[in-house]
Length: 240
Ligand SMILES: Cc1cc2nc3c(=O)[nH]c(=O)nc-3n(C[C@H](O)[C@H](O)[C@H](O)COP(=O)(O)O)c2cc1C
Image (cartoon, rainbow, N blue to C red; front, top):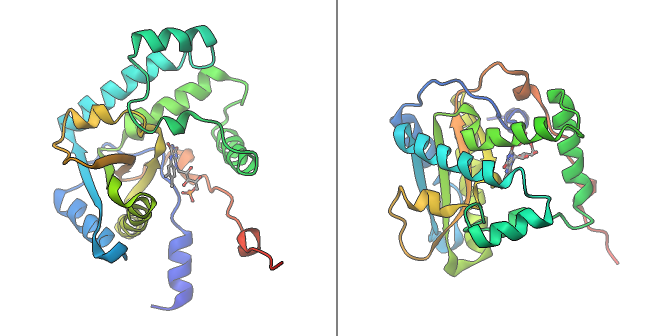
């Protein structure tokens, strides 16, 4: 393959946020997981496991995520609401509470930019809390995708497990893209691992990293959104 062809193929992958209700054959899911497993790995340990949620399992998980979001959404910016949450507990993160923390100053502008541009693309006013919450809730419907993959990593290797998962996911996403499938990595689902644990046997030592919606992209305009991409100079360190 020509390098330029590979570069343009990689650049043509964008996150999908609206899917057709068309099932993805189990054999195709296995093919893209096999693509993921061609990635490099720390001592070839592959400290990752994948929960593949489809059909009834997918629907039950989605329903419970939505139920938690419906509790949290209206009270998350109220002190009293958060205080109440501590007592009722339902809706409190059961994993990765870090996702609810604000970004540090140096990363904040990038996160704000993609948020503003995505909402702008979707015709959502940033001040329209109801519309923004409805857009976020789509995460918990997995954007209509028939498949949700939950990526678990072994805690023993710390950040190297997460790195291995990222490498695996990238190959998996490109394998999906090559087959006309779309993907959306979802930190949004990482806060409630108990929902996934209730449906799958997860061996000891594995923690939920994030989810990935997988399916055939619809023609919805949200899928035409192209997030800004940095240039090499933006991340190249300068010498002293
Ligand atoms: C670990 C991770 C978690 C993400 N979580 C979410 C999410 O919860 N919801 C969402 O809509 N997009 C999510 N994204 C997608 C990013 O917003 C997207 O990758 C980024 O804006 C770049 O756009 P692109 O994938 O189209 O190139 C996530 C991406 C990654 C890598």
